[in-house]
Length: 337
Image (cartoon, rainbow, N blue to C red):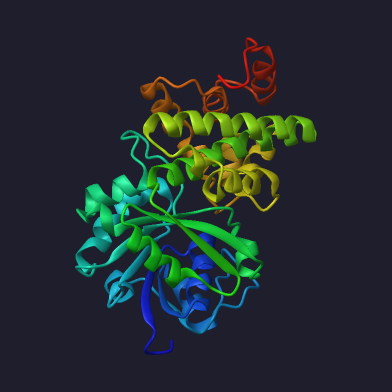
């Protein structure tokens, strides 16, 4: 690894953590990735490739890797969290003792925690006791494989402290990656979490053999659901029309590279949830978060038929065919209610 650059840590060596490490390296940062497994860390550090999650992609030499959290976090003023959302709380105590006093913690995760119904930034704040002004999120239409090919992409970096968001924007801005700033952390997180659930539903429709009319309808109604819930919780509605809302939703629902859409397609073709989990290392966050998003909506008194039905399918209480039929059978109403 080269010396003298801005030191950042990325905690999590899955496909998205590794892809975002490339963005950070291209933006001029020295990056250390923390990996849970020794063989993954060694492949990144010595072979400059994440063989398990992004085979065939050569990583910049300014990316190193380790399984030692203290080594990963030494000197890092920015810490990017890229573990699966449902394991964040259990992982954070491993990292917290080694955080710099002024480190900014940035969530790359998209989910709502089971049980607590906390967003990822809320989990970070509770466990680490870092002030809200030093907790940020990144969200947008960023499929990992396309990011590693350095195809042009944009995203949102959000923090309640606008100056921190602006600093992050500068540190993440690479020749192929354009970040925009926001102070609407809640809106960005809800858009990022909910789109995974909608993508599962769209994937089910594709797996059942339905075409573009059906998928476009589901995407649009999914956006309406997302906006209803996010706005009830206090989000800026314009956030849901932007990169962290509509942009991320379109990419995740439309691309065969999307883990959540692919998971839904397999369900639509008749595979069970357990069979899908057994067939891949990749985590489909929507399958993990659909029940917590449903519970959050019920707590807020917001009607969310897509999230509710997806949760029923994932739990095995409804078939994918029954899910599609349930949408058509719903009572008619004005579009904007």
